[in-house]
Length: 516
Image (spheres, rainbow, N blue to C red):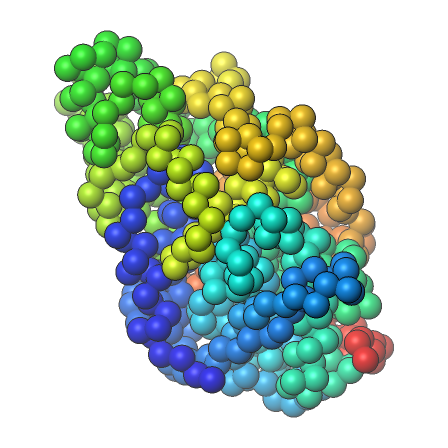
């Protein structure tokens, strides 16, 4: 069944009506905002960044029935998982299938019309399919998001869905048993792409894993270490002066928070707070959100639709001219907040810890794309990924500290800090961390991206390839091509295409048979 743009753009419009809360939520909504703008442009609806004449052809949406508990044959409950199909380049039933895996958010039709799968499909006559992750977007089982339901949400369940969907869709589209299936994914979905090849090599011929944080970690202090380094990099428009200005801006924010009274109230007004900042936990939320704003400028540097690049952020913090004072960095940070708020359609920002907890406790599925409750559950039960700034070299505030982030798991799900640490260790044991041992996987990262430190950035063997793109940010290789793309990014995409060519020639030569 075909779908129109109005049906898909609804979540984006609804997103602008929401109030942001929590640092992690702000960072994820920045990513969602950028993804939606890029996807709408690929469908010929926005920024003029489509993939050519074929981009105007809307893909088809479908639903595959999946077992709620694939590890218990006696449990007959099921749910419908959404997928998208772009078959305009599919030459014949023997052609390859490019399977784009969804991650911790909704998946739109742009997922089969932009980025690696769509850009590479014409050369190989590939069928492009994207699969939305269970419990995100519209692929949420009946019964809501209570804790009893969420126990069926994990990377293990997601990989089981990949297997059953791959078999079901092979039958539905009459795909030849000799057709190689190639997985694509970015960020958490990039890890899933790599793990799908690791765990099911008889079904997945190869994978391209972009910005994939395959190592789970409880205290992700390395994130801000990369942010700090990237703010100093001239290649991204940063400088040592810029990093110093960031530190000065945060010092000024903390000074005004400590002053209390009218000074603190004025700070809240200037930074667009929805409410007061009288509670210490709300002040920590504010500082965390400001960290996320700066981190987001680094993480999504160079992406079309990003509210701020590193160069733009540094320009604001340094005043852009010779008339600078000690207050210039703070004024620049205020302006950065205003730009991001305007870009996301926000009238004010919520820094209320109580409101954050209340929203995360809501078990009703949301109509917008970012699944905050679901993703928190996955970090509490599998990955950690809690960004901290407790290293003295970190340019931000040391708040929020790790204990307050772990406490969210306790408040929302009743999970202890020790259980989270144990879950992180089990994830690394199960998948292998940064040495997964998966063959025919290409790991792609950018050295500006704070997440690359949790990925595979050096080849682990002749069939475990890695590509580290200089000055590239999070999943930038997957974004639609632009005239402004750097030579290193263009070269990186060429390397990806060449690796795919090598794999598909190998598949054709050996007539590898996969599936039934």
